[in-house]
Image (cartoon, rainbow, N blue to C red):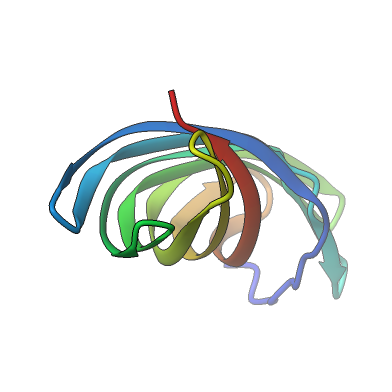
Length: 148
């Protein structure tokens, strides 16, 4: 266990897609995303860097109006993580879970805006020459989507 908390920040970008059904005001479905995390940080000689990441989630929402959907989402998540410490360097894929809330807001009949908060716990994993690393993430994202 490296025993150091490393705060990271940086740009994250990606794409999402899914399928949903609506019964009256209730909306449910599945969604996946894949992206790249350019986050990095260091503390006490330990450096952490992000990489490719993704998730597969269920979504359940309520259409407050025809233009505004409030939803919750949860599922599995993975990411590529690179750690450097004490002259050692290793890279691993970390697996965990994610959960969050958000809103989709209709812009046109086929385009919507999105704001979403998600917490992700990627669990912990042994990194060669470094020890056990635990990774969690709190994130607010903004996006634009299209309906087909």
